[in-house]
Image (cartoon, rainbow, N blue to C red):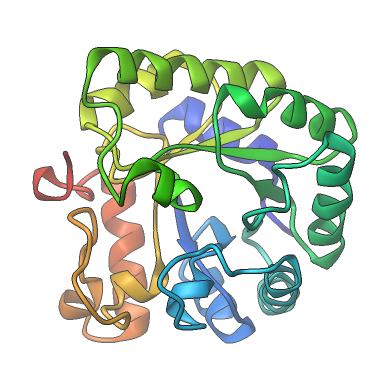
Length: 263
């Protein structure tokens, strides 16, 4: 039986850290499931690690739906979250719902969309109609050109206050989870303490409710320079299965991310 959003909320409330990794196919879904990873994210990162693009922007709804169905077939226990690609949710709430419904039909239990307070009407519309939503604030890769590159967010006082307000607004609109990406660890902790829903950090320090990494990064498969918050778990795990088990163990113990992975 699959993990539910209610169970994830209980885990966060009890201080039991949530593990999440990106996943794109049935084989890895089965492996991650068996290793105890609670949540699998079909990320639009597939545009870079699978398709060879230099950003997530070219990924289509059909791409994510295809990979979501594959992950759903390969897993039995993990909670499944599907990214809404660029251009599929910056629409009217009704049109966004139609797109989200396709991902839910493919096997997602929740959809993830980027943006803070500006997305409140959309989140309200989706959650009122039975679509669980995961927010995503901080560094939002779909806005990389507007942000001027992959930069840490929330370093200044006003920017930090805005991100806290964004998190609270998303929770108020009905979001059931929030990804916090590339922000100072102290801000990650502040946001986590400011909301009652789980926060999933990626470069947001060790005090979030859980952690996520791109699978191809933590296995050191994706070429090129890695972000500061990435750790090569394959090196210490010795095998793919060992790497995933090490990741789960370190997230649960609170030893990952360490200071060297935080801002």
